[in-house]
Image 1 (cartoon, rainbow, N blue to C red):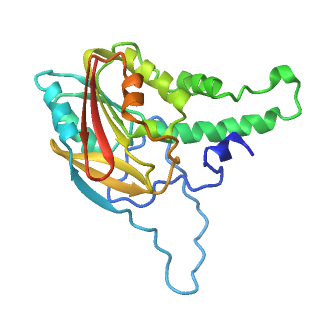
Image 2 (tube, rainbow, N blue to C red):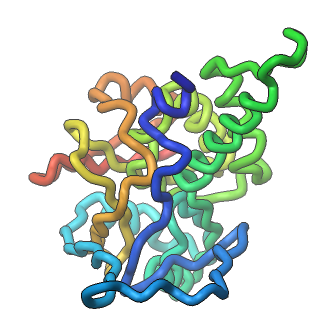
Amino acid sequence: MSFLNKLGIGVGAGAGAGARREAPITMGGSARPRSNSPAPVAAVGAARAPELRESNRVSNGLKEFLWNLDGLGRGTLLDLGPAWQTTLSFFIERGFRVSSEDLLRAWKDFLVEEEGKLREATGRAAQHTLDVTPAARASRFLEANLQYPNSSFDAVLLWDVLDYLEPVVCKQMVANLTELLRPGGVVFAMFHSKKPEGFQRYRVVDSTTLQVISSPVLCPAQRVYQNREIQDLFGRYRTMKSFVGRDQLRESLFIK
C-alpha cells in the first residue's frame, strides 16, 4: 500500500471544490481547462452538481484576532485557505495587503506528485530511490510552499489546516510560520475536538461571523490535537487564547 493510500488520499479521488455560490479566486496556478467535447445526453433529466451546505457561526476568535490587529494601519496578512473574494475584500478594505496560499490543496497535489515520482523510481538503483520518510516529505513540501522572507506578515489565518497534515509537517510548518511573523504578529487557528465527519472551508462574513462551507473531502483528517500538544506546537509564542464552540471547533489565537 502506498503512503498516499495510507493517508486516505486516492489519486483518482475527486479533488474539485464542487459548486459554490462564490468560487475561490485562483492564485498561484491556472484554472482547470474545460473540455470542448459535448456532454453526453442523460437518459432521464440532467445531472446537477450537488450544492454545498453553508452556515454561519459566531466567532469569538475572529473578534479577538481583529482586536489584536486594531490600529496596526497597513498590515500584511497571510491566508492559508482558498482565496475567497469576501475574505480578501474584508481585509483589503481595512488596509491590509493580503497573500493567499491554499495549503491543503497544495498538500494534496504534492502527495499525488510524490506518488508519481515513487512509481518512476521503481527499479532504479538504491541511491536514486525517493526518500519517503515523513521528515523528508515535510522538507520537500515546505521547500516548495510558504516561501516568503522572514518577518513578512503581521497576521496569519491558519484555519484548521493542521488537523489535516502529517504531524511532522505540522511541527516544521509552525516553526516556519513563526519566522514569517513579525514580533507581535498573530495567528488565528482552529482545531477539531474530535475527528471531523466532513470537510469544511471558511470565509469571513463580518468582524464576528465566519461562514462554514461543507465541501468534498480534499484531505482526510490526520490527528486530533489535545491542549498540551497545541501548546507544544506553539511553544515559542508568548500568548495563547482559546474559545471552544458547541460545534466541536476550538478557535485559538497565538501572539508572537
